[in-house]
Image (cartoon, rainbow, N blue to C red):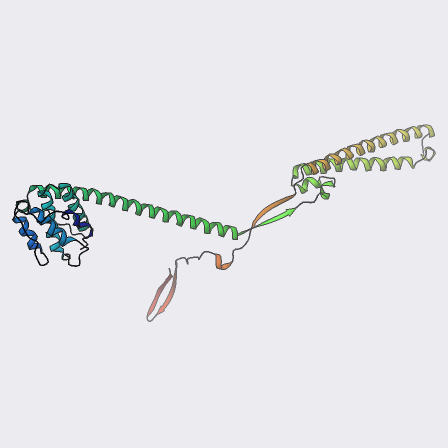
Length: 325
């Protein structure tokens, strides 16, 4: 039993060897025992009782008490004598340390017998016992709270580790592909710059309108060249004046067509190129899946399977059932 908390060596130091009843009592020549403490108590020499018990319980002395029953007896006498000499607070503190140490060893010391030690000593013990009960209850709640907190922390760490591993698996299962755009491609008409910037709708708009304008320009030019190749005198079955007038009007319409088409194509091409440069996107990043290496994959648990097959038995037939779990 540890007695470090029960040491009250200063309680009797500095006091004389005179008994409380005025009768002188000399210190025993040999090492005192619990019997000497009990004799001092029964003789109402309470100061001597405190001095002897304190000496027996002093852990600094090589001959201090170590046997549990003797320690409990000496402590009971010491607390009782402290009460008898008016030092009740010190007695309560002594009992509190004594009970606390016993509770930690699951061996709570017994309350002083009222008939032997008096009601005051028993009351001091009860007060100390209530204090220890309160302290132990607080310690129990703190231990439960610490255990719950440790469990919650462990759960949080487990969840964080699981999330980290899942993130690593997702990272390993994907790769980022970077596609870099070129400025000179944005200068190409027919919506090429828009398609490069991944604006498909706008790209198709510029492509169709520019193709239409370009087709009108080329078509008008070809028609005008075809009409200009026929002189008025080469038209058969018509008068030269009428034929010349018809050719002139056709050439004018053809010229108007390709001129308007050329202006439209130029405007559309310039607008498409300008839009592609103004909204130019330097690069695109795209994530795509890839296979995870075998050593990084989660282990696959085999599924339970049941196999039923016919068996040939002597004198008949049967079914055999096998399974993997």
